[in-house]
Length: 337
Ligand code: GTP
Ligand code: IMP
Ligand code: MG
Image (tube, rainbow, N blue to C red):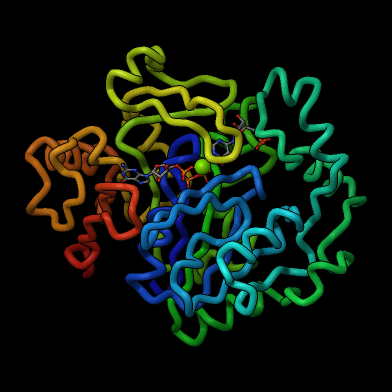
């Protein structure tokens, strides 16, 4: 803090929602700004006995004093956003930039057929066709949508003002480094760049304003949709290891593979990460379930963390030990200079 960017170092679904919800509560984040593609994302937030599957609203909503913004680079599906605002009772603190592009039914229809559905196996949420129209400069934007009028605000101005005032600010990335249109496994990728630089651009924050980039990694790799996944294991093996997951948005099975040090290292480079979080430590090391201090982690988990740090060259400061927002080991203090 004060300005921290959170992005994923693999193929999405590494638990950014959980890490962000923890940071919001712990650091009392004043302003959060959602970056990334749009409602193709699915963040799971588990807090106070409730489970939320968010596609548009920032995951920092759990901290009830946090201002919740959506940057101009993000595609908005108004129906989904309005529903999430209702479910989370966050009406009074949401702001949408007037320049957010709007997903319409025609985009969703196009995304559900042809090569997007069959070859790329997209989420079918209309984001690719909407970004294509945006590039052609024919897409509708938020300021033209009646149901969004009361939320419209200059997001870059709000975010930069908060940073300049020394408040804690989060920039919430979505998807994952290897789904980036520029740095991912083209053509099996999403419809724009999703690394930390792109997340900053999405919300109108320049690179000199960022203090930390937290790269979220999971203790094993998963991927939904088509495209390469190094050292992929069979579904049967994934079930055996407890690694079989289902997508938050589409319900599709996630393919699985062991943790890739190589991908993690490159992701540190591409995102300029200053620290890393590893989620699902409790899945690979069940004895770590619910643990909240580094000393309580098992020898196996510590050895894994040490190897990750050695290979990727940045400290692992956060360890997810369960799905709950507060099920986390936080040793950021140890690394403060
Ligand atoms: P995208 O923006 O779609 O990439 O998603 P995401 O990074 O927010 O992750 P998503 O919520 O889709 O998937 C992560 C899953 O792991 C969810 O079911 C979380 O509840 C769960 N999860 C996150 N962290 C942990 C953890 O440390 N331990 C366990 N057991 N589950 C976790
Ligand atoms: P699209 O972003 O819907 O166009 O999908 C393109 C590719 O990115 C597909 O393989 C999707 O499964 C994947 N994808 C997009 N968003 C996410 C996400 O939030 N988590 C995981 N995979 C995603
Ligand atoms: Mg997800």
